[in-house]
Amino acid sequence: MHRLILIVLFVFCSSCMQLHVPAPRVEFTSIEYKGGDYNFRFRSDRDLVNLYRAHGINEQVGTWLKCSLDGDVDFSILHKIRLYGKGAVSDVRIVEGDRRYEFDVWFRFEEDVNQGSSFRIIRKEVLLSLLGKQDYIPCQVTITATFYKAYYSKVMYVPTSRIIAEVEKVITAPEYVILSPELRPLSWLQFEQICITQRRYHAGDTIVHGGVCSGLPYSGLLSSFAPLKGKFRIVDAQTRKPRQNVRYIIKRSDGRKEEGLSDAQGDTHVFGSNYPENFRLFLFGEELEAVAM
Image (tube, rainbow, N blue to C red):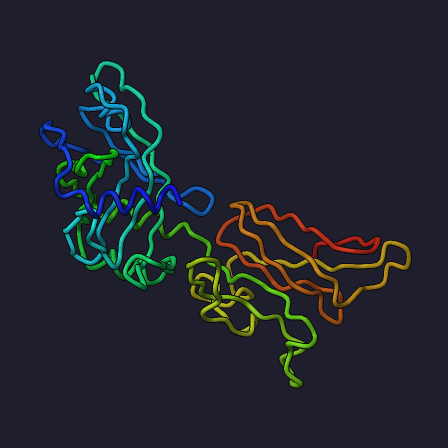
């Protein structure tokens, strides 16, 4: 509710006050893929996290970085860019000897699917296609404060080659879900795991698209064809016999979770990776053990 009130204030803020400070330059430093998001760093000659406070104004709401992926360079707060990357700017430090400030942003690439009311994460293959068509993407910092017009930095151009190098490190795998027996159709699907490939976020999660896990891609290939692959076998701790239909969650090193049911042989789904990775298996229910296969 607090955020909604602030948005309404900004919408009707044509007569608001304005911070009369020249637009600062911002310069790209680096981008690094970490645990599902991107750590984006940039520099400026001004502290953009505390800009209003530096001028005796305590109403600063926040600082955001937004980049356009489709050539739309209208970064005004009321305009909705359809394909973009964005993140809140919260961490700032002084670069010693440089008299400049460096900022950290946890960054995500998203698609606006309903004029700002909902969005979805841009898939790896789509993102690579968008970035590969251009040498640079424009980005701008926006700073908002209550009863003040939005304040904008100058436009920064980020080389797409630096972003592509990090996007290629992303391991794409579908999200595993368990369907209750009453929701499974009376067909071979009742013996298959179902995976979510696309979600929409609007007043809660909505599954937009899914499919049978064994037919979905993993880094462009089926998991069984990934450079490195493996699975677990779930067995009874006493009898050592495989246990089927056991609910499990596999947690990957980047934090992603893949959920499923063991098959008739007690095996989990096959998980693939582009490089050596540690996996953790969580089991639900009885006294069970897992063996790496």
